[in-house]
Amino acid sequence: MTDKEVERRARALYEAREKRLPIAPFTDVDPSLTMDDGYIIQRAFTELLVADGEIIFGYKAGLTSAAMQDMFGVGTPDYGPVMASTIRGDGATVSLDAFIAPKVEAEIVFKLAAPLAGPGVTLRQARAAIGAAMAGLEIVDSRIENWRIRLADTIADLGSTGAAVFGQAVTPSPNLDYRLVGMVFSRNGELVATGAGAAALGDPVAVVAWLANVLGEHGITLEAGQVIMTGALHAAVPLNPGDTFTAEFDRLGSITLHVDGSEPTEKEAIPG
Image 1 (cartoon, rainbow, N blue to C red):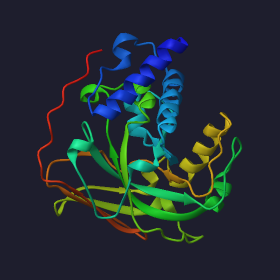
Image 2 (image 1 turned 45 degrees about the horizontal axis):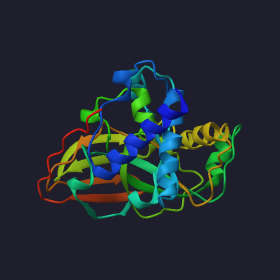
Image 3 (image 1 turned 30 degrees about the vertical axis):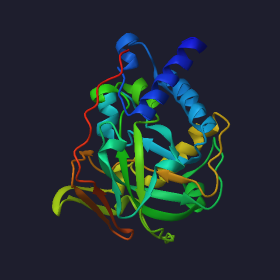
Image 4 (image 1 turned 180 degrees about the horizontal axis):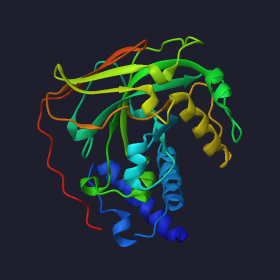
């Protein structure tokens, strides 16, 4: 890609986010776009948001399950920044008009008490840096029309992040095995999914180490106070007007998200 192409694609995502209108996949025009190309666009997109006053609150990991990696034909997770303006508290109500095509998924979230600078961060070092664990709900959303994403598209689009809901911070026990933390996910009181921490790269703490090492290759340090969203424990569930979602985690408590009952405004894609 030329610098001009990177700037144009980053600007297209920025405008799609602002207007809540999807765009055609970049890979429709250029199927050769790679994971690295996606991250180049992501960094340019992030720079536009930060210049506009956004603050990076932490990072999210995606494709942390073997099933999702197989779907995209990769052997590694991906990542994107989490912006402070997208964070909501437990029990929050969201409007569908704030998104394009939102879905929700439950995951384990960590808050760092100490910085982590890769490469070379070990699982033990990652665990020692964790200051708190939280139940989390991520609203994934895509600026790409109809979720027709390939790997480069979703990476460029901040990992398809929309918003996040965090529960109460829990001081981690040194003996707690996050692989075994179970989760029950319900919509309007009906069970729709279950999961366990091991769904996230085999161990959610391994996600923290992986992220620190990957970012470290680009000179980025995970800072104390930042949050790490470690990846979905189940398949994402679409949001509908009036829905209430609850995720109940072993050891971490429960977390709830309400969806406003109003029908969303119909959105049409921005012409490419």
